Amino acid sequence: MPTETILAGQVLSFTRSPWDGGAPEDAAALHEAALLRDGLIAAVGPLATLRREAPQARLVRYGDGALITAGFIDAHVHYPQTAIIASWGKRLIDWLNTYTFPEEMRLQDPAYAARIAARYFDLALAHGTTSMCSYCTVHPASVDAYFTEARRRGLRALGGKTCMDRNAPEGLTDTPQSAHDDSLALLRRWHGEGRLGYVVTPRFAPTSTPEQLESLGALWAAHPDCLMQTHLSEQPDEIAWVRSLYPQARDYLDVYETHGLLGERALYGHAIHLEPRERDRLRETGAALVHCPTSNTFIGSGLFDMAARMTEGQRVGLATDTGGGSSFSMLRTMAAAYEIGQLTGNALHPAQLIWQATAGSAATLHLGDRIGNAAPGMEADLVVLDLASTPAIAQRHAQAGDIWEALFPTIMMGDDRAVRDVWVGGERYAGAA
Ligand code: GUN
Ligand code: ZN
Image (cartoon, rainbow, N blue to C red; front, top):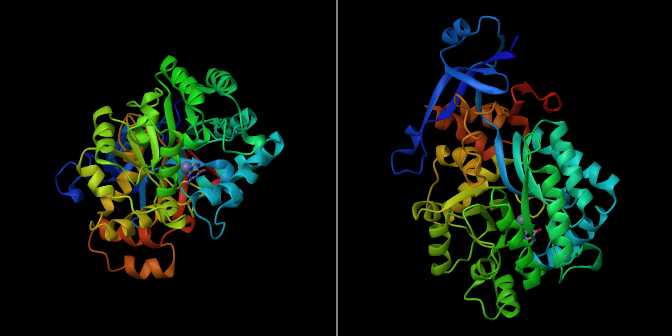
């Protein structure tokens, strides 16, 4: 007997991208219910139709005050930084040296890494995030801890060993050879294991020698179905540093390109301060940018103009960048993206915000055919939002004229209290209640 469940409430499915030039509000449809079967969304539609189709299915009624959407997808996170989120008063390079590197060093202890991985996934799921693409630390055991926890919870998760061979403390560095060999061993162990995927992960140009970038470029070329993630143009000081370390490069992106680290499956975190040539090249290659709005304000990095990047045809995902980001919540992340949009002259529509946190991020991870949309054939990773989760949100929600007005107060003011339930692979996630 297949496992069948019907979730009844308001199911939000995207029928197209809200960035394709048409009215954003028409990019999605609402359905009365979703039928989950064998880990997938088998159908969405009227409740009576789905009950006829699956009379044996268990029925879970969430009511009209709930919104059932694809689970959130965090396209750039550092799980090892969970315990140092919200650390005060530094900008990027000082923040890395003062808070990040000492904490990442602690993950050399596999037992500590396992504890932090469990804590991170507990928090992510409590906030409605069902897929993530994470940096681990330099230590292979931190990658094992991450994937072991993700597998235990049945998540579609991506990640990789962070590689650094200079400008980092001794306990956090590897070499061009060991970065390649350790990454390859981890890739063989975890890539395609169940729902997991390995991501080649040089931290960023300042912490790698040209030889290390080269060796990771070669690894990626040999495993082209993997993603590659790194950081690009987050702060002006960092860009100047890259220029001094790589004087022959035309610009920051050129450092990655000349070492084999640019391509369609590349993900660049932040990418705020780009030169026109870099933007052209990113668009030509189809690489993805990842907007990390709470991090960009928290570490003082700058204003990423998401609407301009989308309009010029870039692929853009959305992410917390925890612990540079100041929240585990993709709702809070959408709110920050909205606020930055206001400062760059574009009021992002709620449909665009929630698309970016689901289908948009899925597309940047090349998983858009599997996750990120509550639509037939997709994997049944869903979040059930309570659209009136606090008194402040409830009183605004009560005035809403349509679904976007009903959702927007939760985007702007919601947190883990808005997450009523999480479904992972067609099963209710037990730890989220
Ligand atoms: N650049 C290089 N490493 C990091 C990191 O851990 N966080 C952020 N926000 N930027 C980085
Ligand atoms: Zn980052």
